[in-house]
Length: 330
Ligand code: PMP
Image (tube, protein in one colour):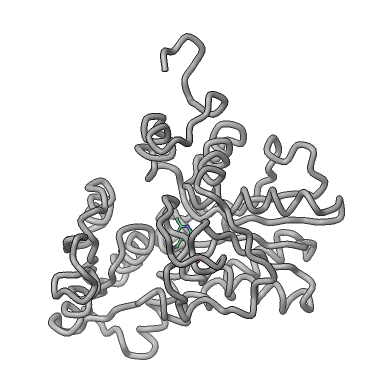
C-alpha cells in the first residue's frame, strides 16, 4: 500500500511541466513548477510547515497553542492544515475587503476569522495590523508566524523548492523566475540554486508595475499576492540578478492563456511570473532551461481574472482574449 500518514506529509515535491503553446518561436526549454498541486493549493504550504516546526523546536509554540496571523489566503490555508494535524487553534485576521468566499475557505479548515475594517489608518486600534498584535498579547499561548519577517519562510524554499528544482532538472536549470511578495520564494530558492550551481543559475524576480521591487512607490495594481509597498526582511536583495516589471494587463492575459492553451488554471501572479519568463526567454538560446514557479490555483480568482465583465471593467479584455464563443453578443 502506498499512502501518506497525513495530508501535511504531501507538501512539496510538486511536478515540472513544459510550457508548449506559450513558448512557440522561443528557443529555450521553459518549465513551470506547479505549486497548486500542494495539498492546500499553493506554494505557501511549504512555509507554513517549516515556520510551525521551527517555532515548536524553539519553544515559541507550545502544545495547545494558538497561531495568530494577518492573512486572507494561501498562508492561512497552509497554516490551518498543519495546525489541524498538530492540534493548534488558528485565528486569522483579514480586512473586510477580502471576499466572503476566501474567509469561508479558512473557516472550512477549522480556523477562526476576525474581520477588520479596511477603511481605517494602520495606526487605528481596529486596523488589521493592530488587531492581530493585540490578539497575540491577549490570547494565552499565542504565536504569530509573521511571514514577512520569519527567516523560516526563505529557509523553507532553500530546503525544499531549491533542491527539488536542481534534482528535477538534473542540474541543467539556467534561469529561475518567480514573483516577489514576501520575497521568501525567490530568496530561498534562488540562494540554493546559486549555491548548487556555483553561482551560474540566474535568478529573475517578476514584479507588478508600481511595486517597490521594480522601483515603484507601492502604487496600486490588481494582481494579488505579489509586489509590496515596503521592503520585507524575508527578501534578500543580494539574490536576484534582474527584476522584470509586468503590467496587470500582461499578467492577466498570460494567466488566461495558461488556462486556455496549457491547461493550467492558475492565479494572476502565475501569469505575471510566466509573462516575465517569456520575455526573458526571447533573449536566450536552445541551451537554456528556464523554470518559472506558479504559486497557486486559478479557482480563487474565478470572479476576477476569469470573469469577462470584471476584466472588461478595467479595460483588459480584448476580442482575442475573451472567453465568449462565436455568436455570443458581447
Ligand atoms: N503569488 C501568490 C498568489 C502569493 O500568495 C504569494 C505570497 N505572498 C506570492 C505569489 C509571492 O511569494 P513570496 O511571498 O514567497 O514572495
